[in-house]
Length: 132
Image 1: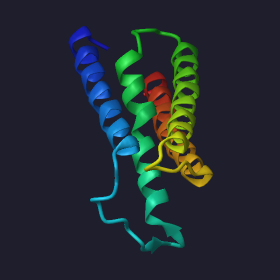
Image 2: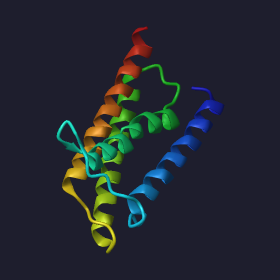
Image 3: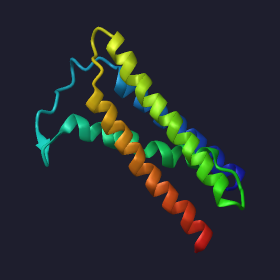
């Protein structure tokens, strides 16, 4: 990846992280809480899925090098997924410490499933670069 592209990717990733932090820690008193479900899933859990699904894609774009070996790309992706899971766990834990928020294990599960989906998309991209 060219240096200019990687720099832009890093900026986009930082903006994404800032947006996730705002969504995770802001007071939600003024925001109407969705009460509907989609296929039996609460809207909140779907929002968590879509909030964390871009993490592997954007972080990979920001940190991937110009390596020829695909194993290095997969190793980076694994490390980024571990960092993402730690971040999701951290946000849910911090929410338990805030008096105006609450942590939820199901939110954490939705975060991990979202990251797994984003990780799968990224892994397919890595493989397609190698074989196409």
